[in-house]
Length: 298
Image (cartoon, rainbow, N blue to C red):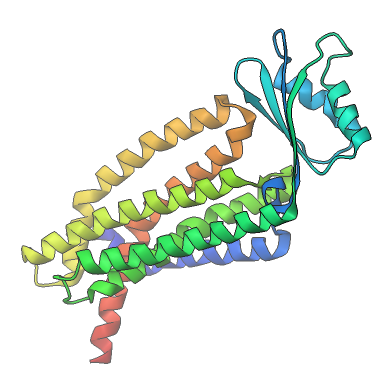
């Protein structure tokens, strides 16, 4: 009952973090990678052992080509994503990564990605998020159709979407800081992280709502506040323990994994943390607040 008793405090914390994230997004903005704004993609393979990724980044730095994403592929290759390259810049990149001619790589692929491809990816990403959100509302409204009192079933779905906005906006706000100060760019992994957070967060929220639904059907209390409070006490250990195990794996990926997935792991970690927070400290208090609002209108 502690969470429901102090629901205004937890709701205020969530609102404050979301507002701060919107302010950061409006102030700093996001840097888009070549997947969205166009650029060049190069795949090379070394006949002997490939150089360390840090050495590749060091060799490319003097070329002043902006942010270059270097991703290992296979046992001996790298994929390089850069801005659009002239022929001279293309040659300079190949020369820079050949270790002074001692370990010349074979260029297996070189493609230019035009802005039209970036726009198509952007459109599909936005469409995917909208469709996922609508699907969540319809699914929850259908699953909770037999529990229409004291809160209508569609409101469960609407509250779930509000919590998803919370769970996505706060990591995005964090990413704007990384984008502004550390040059992190929005790429397809960013979209994957957002969609994964959406799925994991709504799953956790549904677990909480489902326990509330079962306790309403079982009439464990005539008071809705008490029913929600007891439901939270029954499920929050499971939610926290499950999220902690995932977060520990993501932190290992961030600290010990390849640099190409560091921002992805950090976004996922933030998403898991705030997704668990919202399921316990935001979704259920919102449900109680909606019930109180309905009673005041009567």
